[in-house]
Amino acid sequence: MRSFAYLALLASAAVATPALAQEAAAPFTGPRVEGIVGWDRTQAGGHDDGALYGIGAGYDVQAGPAIVGVETELNDSSAKECVGAATSTDPRLCAKAGRDIYAGGRVGTVVGGSTLLYAKAGYTNGRYKLTSDAGADSTVVDSTNLDGVRVGAGVEHAVGPNSFLKAEYRYSNYEQGVERHQALAGFGFRF
Image 1 (cartoon, rainbow, N blue to C red):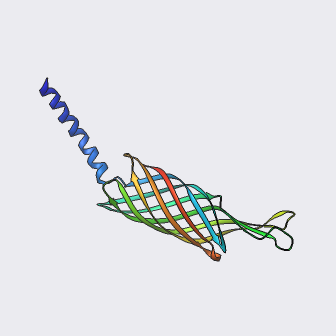
Image 2 (image 1 turned 90 degrees about the horizontal axis):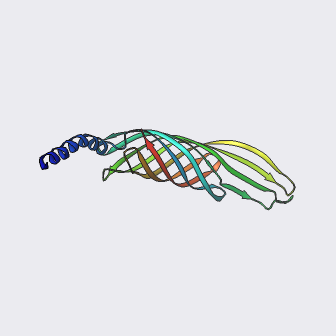
């Protein structure tokens, strides 16, 4: 009976070893999708904080500890920056951050087998809605899309064979002097 138990243990170890080796060898390879939430600060003369939420997708290739990948993201924000007193002599002007589209790449290195440290850069396009309030009515002055560049850094940790948690900081610089600072957390799946 003891020999049978020993044989069963060896057989199960032999079957599990290739699967474990594959996960340990490249846990950050392949397509991925994620949901994100976080803090968003829009700056254009002054600043305002808001909540950031969105979805992302990407594809990474791992060669040893090095990672290279492409990614895209669509997010929205509650950030709204206003100046003025909302009177006829000092109208209140507000810029509300809207959807933001990002496409770029990232490079990184795996630390400890299940943690990825990375840096990213790419193109971003943010929509802003400008409104004016002179005390009586609020009117839409303009809705505009601003092109920009985003750079950032983050950490991603594999919490299972196909899932991960991430934390990231990024800075975006748009046309017309608009900037954004964002810190976020995310949860995703790798296929």
